[in-house]
Length: 175
Image (cartoon, rainbow, N blue to C red; front, side, top):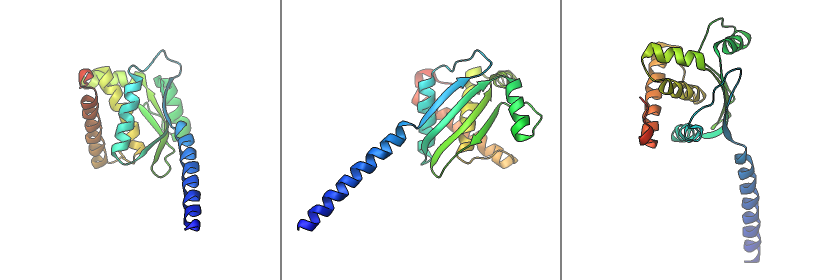
């Protein structure tokens, strides 16, 4: 009986120590937004963080460190040329640092491209911005878009995520 109590106490202490370690690690998990070379601040940032977190959680994954950088066309073109050897403008570049079920990465978004795309698609800027924001997360979750079937599935998942936004924040619906 005495040995059982000792083993139990040791397990409880071990659990408490591990729980503290996990909580310390989780404190550093975050979603951050910044801008470079442009005057841009993401509106509703806390709601966007909650939405992104929910999309990740619904897929059975955990939020790691996700950093968004909003920039202009020229900055993103430079990154595209330097790191991906692509000489084209793009709306988003995602650098994947995912480890198992911990979703982490750097996502760079051209606000210029988002604005141009919104005009071309006839949608509000905010709707296109949120579509692009979640597009990067979907890449981190493993969704590709290189083939026609992958691109169609990406679009379906983007629409599903935008619908989730409307469910989470019905007063501030988009699209």
